View 1 (spheres, helix red, strand yellow):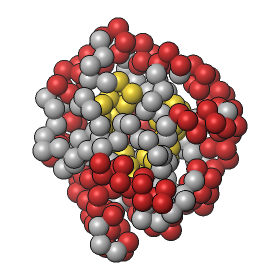
View 2 (spheres, helix red, strand yellow):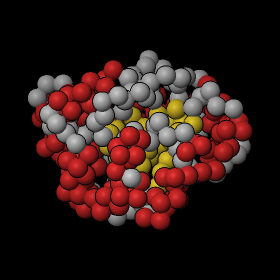
View 3 (cartoon, helix red, strand yellow):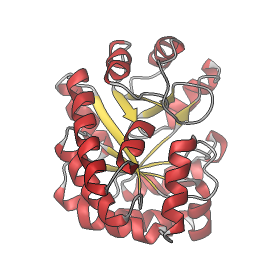
View 4 (spheres, one colour):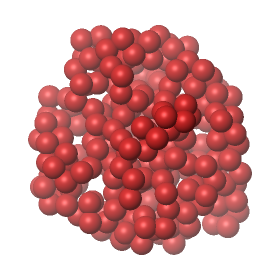
Length: 264
């Protein structure tokens, strides 16, 4: 399986911008999650972000919160999510990045949690409520088992903090495009260009931009500003939840292809 870092290096060698779609595991059901992972891989995803349903998702907007609530109502647990990853990861090219809040990690213990991820085939990890000051407790053991822990840079971060986060982040740097939660927006904040420039001044690591990218032209704009990856979440989660699972999958596949074509 390809690591997150190796995937980005390969894309850079080909001068390509990565597409990273996000889905919530277990919504509408685990069977559809497995199908969606395969579909996204076949529809142009370079990496895939898979959200673990959580009861208090502070970084997520209403679309992803609702998806997590639906999954939790079906009693979807971390172990169910990892079973799906273990089933699907050998069949797809795109590395899977798990998106989870810190509480499930704390509850199980970082070393045990990371070992479970590695055994399932997870290649990366994003923990939105993990501050830089506490990150070392996860970064070091993750590095030892070969999982890249990607840290987030907020649009309000001063340059000193941006530099510190960039230094520690593994795989790539997750640049949050807006102040607030995830969700679809009519346009990408123009400050993203300035933030990308600031990040480029302190690091040569790949940068992925997320939160608010919901249309092909958004993805193209972010690419033109210099991003190495576009991360698309709510727009995909919303499509997957509409109609029957088959209709949702069809809509997701078409949308994913349209984003990929825009950034090619």
